[in-house]
Length: 355
Image (cartoon, rainbow, N blue to C red):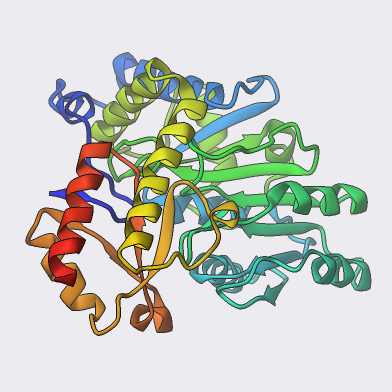
């Protein structure tokens, strides 16, 4: 079964076999070697200076990393502006509400790009804002939000930027040289091609020095401090760490995130062109979309359950639209161990279904 959903992904045999390594106690030096390799390689994905940036690992899905980042990096006297144009922006606002973090949400339509002029005006109207949070790749629609432009807005006002990079880290450009960027939260089981259970925050060490401590298990400051000391506060998902390290080695061997971006882009274009030829239009123009996932209009007369089940019978798992969009669109991701021949078989499945 090939997974065309936005994570978890279809694994390579190399990563799958890494799960068969020896059982490991998380208090032994061998585990800390593994943890340190993961942290080192994560910082190296975008060529970052380890004196300025730290990879903080945790056991949990990508949402755990987003929660940890949000709860720690907005100070007690800070205020967060959440830029929302999909389900995952909504989730950051819910996290801020749960922790009692002062915040406002600037809501956009789920089909719309963030309105940069409106964001700038809102920040100028309220000088108490200290941080802005945004989703880089909003998988609700496949839109790639312009974090470079948002970073420029933050830099001009001395604000700090927090980015949910859960489904973009490792395949899309992220400008860590942006002086406003404090952290990017991400996970192992999307563009890195690991397994669920390990997530992480790439965070400025300077931001960690100011971190709040609102949470217990996901306390970013404590996790960072102990990991720098070759330690861990809790029992991590050891085998997920094995897979993450092997996936990071594989990423490096394949040419890094630039090569992965190019591979995804070719596959995404193959899907787009093939579905367009079969009468299924993309929801967003390619230049506004990520290479990781794209959304398409459902074919006339065919509902998502019928489409899903017919393709699953042929060995493919696709993904529904979220919320009210489930009646209008479906989504296809090209992450994981997927190749051009697989996409051709997928398109043949669409052709059979249309007939």
